[in-house]
Amino acid sequence: MRLTTTGLKVLAMVMAVGVAACSDDSLPTEPVESGPPTFSLVQSLLAEDCSGCHAAGTLRIFTVDMDSAAFVISGLINSAEPAKSLILTKPRSLAHGGGVIASFLDDDIAQIQGWIGLQPFLNLNVVEAVRVGSRVAPNSDGYANEAVWRQAPTIVAPLGGGWADAQDVTLSAAYDDEYIYLLARWYDDAESTRRSPWVKNADGSWSTLSAKPTPQAGIPWADYMHAGFEEEDYFYEDKFAMIWNTYGATTIAGFDEQGCASICHDPVNNFGPGTTYNYDNQNLAAKKYTNAPGEIGDIWHWKLVRQNQHNKIDDQYVGYWTQGGADPGHAGRHTDAGSGGYGSNPATNGVPTYRGPSLTGPPYYILNAEKMVVTQAELDGLPVGAMLPNMITSGPTDLRADVDAHGVYNPANQLWTVEIRRKLVTGDSHDVQFDDLTREYAFGTAVFDNAQIEHSWNAQVYKLKFVN
Image (tube, rainbow, N blue to C red; front, side):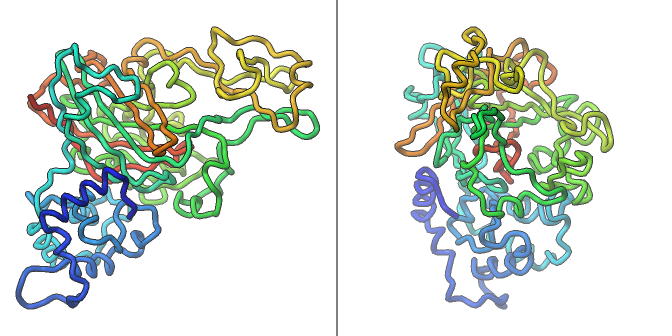
């Protein structure tokens, strides 16, 4: 498991309190009659029960080759309440992508639980939002140079499952009387800005470039992503998302315990979590939806090419859907009221209709207020391989524009930084309302590395806590 710079700092802290000493590969891997359970024993049990899906190189958050220090900071264990550790509860739950693991026996659980109880409690799954005055609040410009971000606690949330370069995202939070502020950072080897642009072909015709090769129907993400292609060779955009449980009448049952797995459904996996493609029949593909009428999850979806220039996140939500229901392509995913403020650059007689102030990209979007009709002479004068933007943008409107955000990519350290701001209380029934500062709010994050849907996500559940 590769760690980011922030992850290495946490790892150093863990080793300083002696966690690394728990890993002793010279000890036997078979259960011993007396003495505390060792990490070698834990690792052997997990390898025996989990290696079919969680072997090294499977792109999952947990892999059976993790050492003890990486395992402790993964967020998969809870030494304060060992029995509630995700590594123990998930394999025995229908919310586990691999289904219930029958070979994960009570004796195995007891041994692993005993080892977890010996580890230091780091509370790595709680983001503490610190109170700030409105005069010193972050301005959500993506540069994160405000003093509050040097003071707010930071957690490292491991990611897995998709093709993102990032293996974790770091998170911090702050608030004042009106707003909640969040800071997210993650590693990416390149900024992906070319979202399905128009390209001039060798014969002089024009076409739009694909976001990815079309996956075979029924193939799981992991198999497709191991097919030997590099994500930056294709044409989409970087994105980031958060999904929040809502509370009261719209609470998603199970989300606070299982996170995003509670709303992920794959027909190939008996409608448990999974990642199967099927563009031929969307009813046979993995989808997001809640499990009962009235349940709602609030989605904040940052889109680099379509909305970053407008300093906005797309405010969306996930709701109830039944298999075979209307619009299987989207299933339970919806948007709040309003417009997304973007659309494709349409074709006129087979060629792109509009250009921006710059004839070709970058940037690979055209502001709606600046679009102008491109002439045939201009197109004829371009060389083969020239690209024109295929996104015309004006920014989201109405309730869909409730969340402010801006992201900045730093090529020197290959880090994305996104600052987010939203009113604590919006009044929209599809939004999480931060109206009780004494409770904890459950959420998960996802990183899309030049990806439409192949996001890397948190297997763990994270909580936002307000502190004075």
